[in-house]
Length: 362
Ligand SMILES: [Zn+2]
Image (cartoon, rainbow, N blue to C red; front, side):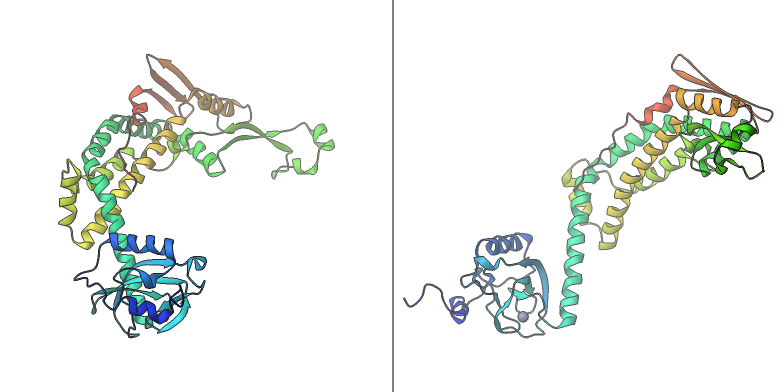
């Protein structure tokens, strides 16, 4: 034997026959190929591969992208590209299915006519997206009925939040308006406080207020739960929107049911289904986050902060806000010249937390 390392042209001769694939081969082949590349660095020696030469315009579909570790190659050279007929040509390549020749080949990344490559890349991405959609739906369609259960379970919490939100707007419009202005200024509860004229003389000039009076901000902390004072908040509508999407999906008790449902979908339907079902996952998380923020308004600490703020002698429109607890319920009252608010907030409002959203990440 002259050499343990065959010359490049010998490699082509080693595979006078290439394997025929009637249809686009499954993922298993791309996986075998990538494993072969990881071990040998030699696409030329993958069993059954088309040895070339190939026409530049030969149509193909991309099965996988790969890169070669040069050190693993017999001569530490680059791979032969059957499409540009050159040895020592590439390290970044694509494993492709030649649709007319019904064979697989490995070609250099830069190879093939430009329009061919763009079409193959687009097709490759579409199939990769399709796979991701199928995987997601397969894992998540069987959870749809439990997602519906989760929606039902948190409805009482959402209904109570909506009732209290609307009552605040109706019976405490002045407090809501003031607190909304605070939210818009960064949620810091402050009152402009006049300071002693003698003290101001020795203080820094920055103490001078815009009215000519010397003031400084008395600070009462940060307002929590600003969702309670926004213009529009409707947790029931949020749940309804999620449920409307979930109702569209077929009952799938098992992965087999899901598989059957997925197979009956057109490309557009499958894309829509995966996108919208994913959306329900993030929408439910947003619902819970908003509920948590709404409830944060009614904590003892937050109400005490607001009360201290509004009780400051120089607060421009003072009111009283009080909180008590009775048998698990929070009783909140707000009274001022304009406001007469009283609500008993049922403990149900906290039950939005208890519900686990069934979700399978893929
Ligand atoms: Zn090439």
